[in-house]
Image (cartoon, rainbow, N blue to C red; front, side):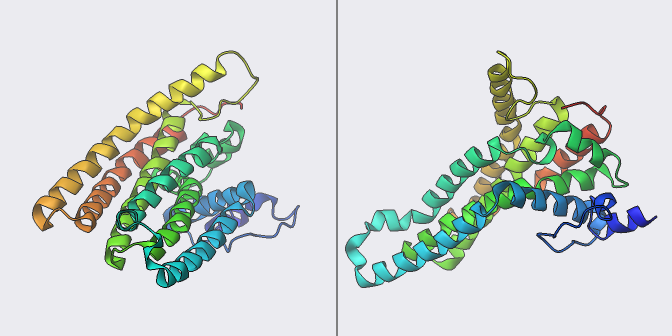
Length: 274
């Protein structure tokens, strides 16, 4: 009973709380149908893996944005107008690429070591809630990179705040889809971005297979985003803001299906050694 109470308070690893006093990096989340404790554990693990890198990136983004804002106001012609017009989408594309490099090498969510994942299979939480909580660590890192690179772009762009907000919304939707796809591939196939176990000649092949399957898994989200952007543009006019919001909503709308598949596949799979 005490174990269940600790889990519901957000302390997923509560069974070790009596034997080792560890300072919490984040306040405990609520239950939220089981999503809270899983998301808390993933965010905490992500912070421990990345250390001070993510906060440092955010600080650099804030400092760079202030410096660029002052420079643009003092020397308005120092930045080409065409670059200022497209600064925000360029920054989001760069953030997506960097996020891909960072998260593809991180072992979080369902792509973590199998021995660690066995614990989650024993929790009294619905598979869908586990799958949703599992994307929190990867999605948080991606979102931090998006915001850190977006701030300098906002400082120099000629676009409105609404325009920037719409593009950020689309970028965050892509982050969620990206994190979901990684977890879905890992849960459904057992493949990992970084192969685990004893090094062998087939690890590179397994990594390539993972990338291929991951690319295929992202196709529905890409198609949904394109369809949402086209539909929104046809109704509200083909502007950056309208298309970005339509694409983001369409991408998010189909993710619950992938969460359900990943959660069911994970919970009902046989525990494996790492």
